[in-house]
Length: 396
Length: 45
Image (cartoon, each protein chain N blue to C red):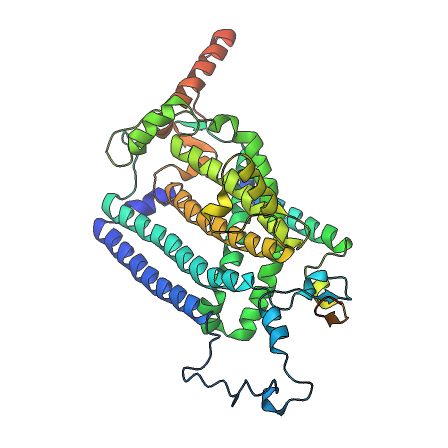
């Protein structure tokens, strides 16, 4: 209720100022992210083309009066193209001194991923700010009824917060890995950032297991309620009723928007967890080979669509593909969850109570989950008929 | 509030538990890159 009163005080002009502030922040952050993508690709020869070697083709002579034998250009050409040798150490991957595909990975990892990831996340923030400025907070049309009904049990809410809390920690520490160099180091310096990055790595590695546990928990508690139904089509066709006042398409316990977020979280979360496992235990899995082969078996030539060679992939390529996939899916999920957080808190009056106290206002429930309320009332009526009591009891 | 605290407590318990288990298994993602010494021989030999 305190959040409701706070939101009430936000006038139209204040909402506009809020949107402008978010927009300004977004533009600055985007510029920082873009500069990050450029900065991380800064290993280039000097503009003059002078590499410091007077004549690198002088009869195989090593430039710079270095000790050692003459330069074997054919050997180094082979090394550069990814030819692997033999090593006497257990890590046989060390036999490949220069991995050619690594250049492609580096371009994607340092360029496309942080750039488009920043656009996606900041774009979502801007969209939500514009939405908030134009439409404001979605109110309960008939006002609060003053009667609440239980929407989520304490166990369900604890499971939700375990998943949500671990996701936020993973997202923040993951974003630190991707953008920390350009966004945080200029502010706090290298030494402080090193400590943050080290602890961030520990948090990321170990909190990941809590996120996996959370995924399992919410799947077994809510999967049945999130099976798509015919009413979801109506809900989607009416845009969830958020763009037209007093329009509330019927929905059961979860509406179509919540179901989309649920399944994106489940499948996206599984995908991120598997690729994260592969990164945590490097060279122990063949996830990408396995996935691509299955896709090709069912007639979907995903490697060709993505411009990748056919599987199987070497251990190093597996790691690189897992890393890219982990980052892309994590950024996508972060973008989705930002919208989820908005609509579950600032964006809709009464929504936070569902995961706060677990008790929601009856009018809110009738407007946003009318079929669920009807089911509850039917159950209560049946109970009342058995025990001779009243059908709807206020929870508080 | 209790549910929120319960969820956060579960995160801490699971994360610390995972750290203890993995540590007891000798887990370190850097081990195989930093703790070995040897030679590299290029070519077919």
